Every structure is written in C-alpha cells, then in structure tokens.
Length: 431
View 1 (cartoon, rainbow, N blue to C red):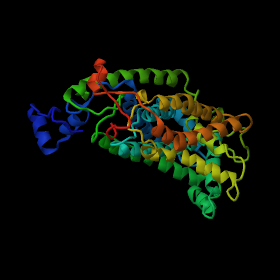
View 2: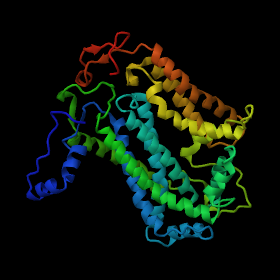
View 3: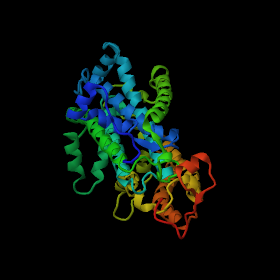
View 4: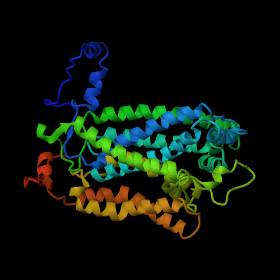
C-alpha cells in the first residue's frame, strides 16, 4: 500500500545505511511491518488473527523440524519412534505435544480469520487475490494436517488414512488407480507412510511461500477494516509500528496463555485415545473419526446416503466435501453488494449469525459424532443450508438488501461523526 504520507526509511547508523544500499532488507521490513506501513486506525482485535496464524505456522515448522530428526517413517517402528520421542528424547514430550496442539491452535485462529473475512467482506474488490491465496493456504493446511495425523501410526492414524484415501476410489474410471498410486499399494503401509512423511515435512514450507504471497498481495490495496470504507486521508491511518505491533503483542500474549494451558494441563484433550494403540489392520475401531478441524467437512461427506440417478452416494459426498471449500473461491463474485462490512448490512447480518454460524456448529458436532441418527439427518440439513447460504442466499441478499448509511470516512467512524455516505440505488461503485 503506497500513500504519499507514509514515512520513508532513512537509516542513520553507518552499518544499516551500508546494508540498505547493498541489500535493502531493513527497508523491506520497515515498509512491511514498521512505521512505513500505514494501516486503518480502526482495526479491532479481530485483525490480530493473521499475525497469530503466522506465529502458529512458524511454531509448527520449528517443532516439526526437530521432531523429524527423531521420527522413523517405517511402518514397523513408527509408533515406537513416537513413544521414544516422548520418553527418551530430552524435552521430546514437550515438542510432541507442542506440535500436536499447535496444529489445533493453527486451525482455531485460521477458522476465526476466515469467518472474520466472511463477515467483513474481506473477499471483495480490490482484495480478491488476497482472499484466493488465503483459500489456497487453507487447502494446503488441510492436506498437511491429514498427512501429519497419519504419522504416529496408531489405530486412528491407520484407519483414518484408509478411509480418506479410499474416497478417491469413488472417482469414476481413474479412482482405483489413483488410490493405489497415492498409497504406493493397496492399503496404507510402508510406502504410504514414507510418502506422507515426506509431504508433511515439505508442505509447511510451501504454505510459508504462499503466506509471503498473501502478505505481499495485502500490501498492494492495504488492510480492510470494520467499516469497509477505504482510506481517504492521512487521518484515517496510523503507522503499523508501534500501534499495531503493540496490539498484536497483546493478542499474542493471550494466545500463548491459552495455548500453554492446553499444552501443559490438557495435552491429550483434542486427541483420540485409539491413537495410543499401535496400528492394527485386522482390528477396525468402533468409531473412525478424524481430527476436530476436519469434522464439518467429514459431516458433509457423510451427509450423502442415497444414490442420485447414476451418481453413487459416495461420489456425491466426495464432491460435496471438496465443493464446500472450493465455493469460497467464488465469493468475490457471488456477493455483489457494494457494501463490505456486515456491520452495515442488516439482512446479511441476520443470515450470517442465525444461519451460517449455527450450520457450521452443527457440522462440527455431527462430524465428530457416530454415523447414526439423529446426526446424519442434522448433518444433511446443515449441509443443505451451507450450500444454499453461499450459492442462493448471498447473491439474493446482495440484490435486495438496503444497507445502512456508511460513515464518510474511517475518521468519522472512529470519532462518531454524523456524516454518512448513503449507499443505495444511486450509489457509486463498491466502497
């Protein structure tokens, strides 16, 4: 984001001046997260979660690299190597629990970050590319997390891998060969474990690369804000440092307190007891369930129980599961309202809080429950609403809704000025 009033980097120290001339890394950091990067002055704590997601990613990379030094990706000793990390490696138990619970923390902040984007219209022009890269990051996270869940090679790891890779067999013609190619055989074994370990180690660095692109794309139009009104003058902004570094620091402190409570007092609360049993291909668990962050999409997968003409239920479930995330790619074009923020969209706000959020909570609940009634019926209803919300309700609301008057500027919103910009039939293009 380039503004004429943004401060320019002027190093005074001779060493920093030399470095800036030969390799302008200090200037890059200053313009990215320092006083040279002006941001809207009204950002709330809901804008902390991008920084928290970045911190969680780095935590996962650091702990994962150290764990990889002690892990053995061999089906005969993988489970024993994890137990050896827990018992014999110095601070191994801390690294293992930090990595396992760090994945949950990563998904918590990312889910909040995504739904904040839904509510405040962060996917609208001119920020479409930021949103699209964010969805790519989420898809890579899902793939990385699935492969990481397989590595302990416990009962739930093995059978989770068998169930999830078995979904590819639903694809006509190429499904069976594709499943064999992914696993390196006809069932999860040594070849699959080696492949998953390699990809699980590699993909976080791919995610880091896409995150850098995500931040780069963000710095072109700049951050959105709770009003959805674009920056109009210098009074609408403050330097990122020290104002938002301090605010993000406070948010990071709260995050670390909650994370450490789980890490030291509830380290296994988000795991599954069956994963402390070595993988046994001859003993199927009573209830196969993935990690909690997959539950809503697992519920969508299981919501399809009847064939539809020539399409089998299994294929419909797989298509719906992937479509539940892919529909996010089209949000910039599905929601055509000229107003971004849900604060000024009363009809959108009702459907968001009374429709979408309860539907997601039901999907989370049903995804972790057994595949029986009433959970199947509830997941079917929630799945139906989920797709109707994005594909039907959102476009219609954008056409018929009468938004509330917007503040003329960010400064007016902060100072509670009476000036308002009416957005209606004669409105200008997107605010």
